[in-house]
Amino acid sequence: MNVDISGKVIVVTGSSRGIGSELIRSFSAEKAKVVINYYNSEVQARELYDEILALNTDCLMIKANVTNPSEVSFLYHETIKAFGRVDVLINNAGICDDNLIQIMSIDQWKKVLDVNLTGAFLCSREFSKIMIKQNYGKIINIASMKGQDGCAGQVNYSASKAGLIGLTKTLAKELGQYNITVNAICPGFIVTDLNRHDESKKDIAKKKSVLRTMSSLQDLLGFIIYTSSDLFSGVSGRVFNLDSRIT
Image (cartoon, rainbow, N blue to C red; front, side):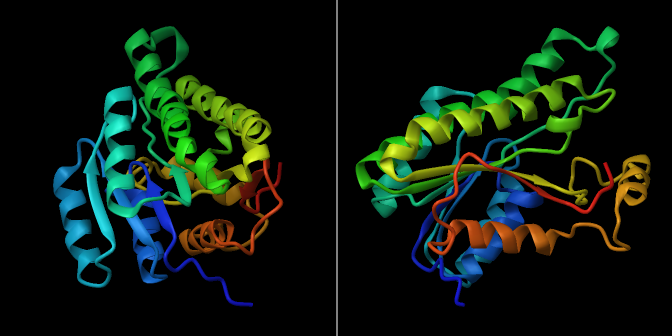
């Protein structure tokens, strides 16, 4: 079985670093046409863009704040101008700003909800336009186990990821008639810029895992490449938990 995504136009939001940048690298290696989206991390985005261009010239780098409708529109139109279509949108942009509820500010709450949930809504609304015209497309939302289980000290993050799961299920029902699939992926514990120095979370993840080695980055990348391909069809509105935890 050959998983072929060559030539597919894939937009990854928040892809200047972390899981997003690794997705861009993996898609590029598979000869997909990729769009790097960033907002604050211009240096990292430029480094990634230069790295990808050395191997794959079908690459764009576009600055856009996913919480701003006009900037999301700019991201969309620049992508269409360059490639003429969009096959896969991956709503990956996400942030944390942790605190216990009694001391969490309204700004902390809104900021995380805006990026993690409103950003996915705006991008899905915009990019589904071309997918409807194409009568084809895939939207993949990077959610979290915390959106299912909750996490003390992360009420904003957990709520945003729970909302993303709800968004996934609803969009699948709305867009299915246009041959557009919408699914969510909840990775297991993967070291990223958001959790790199949090040893307590690593320890908790290890204790819950039934395997000696927990869900790896390569597992996640391989699964997303597969779900982005034409081999993965007829499945929509699903939430995939990529871990080996004991509940």
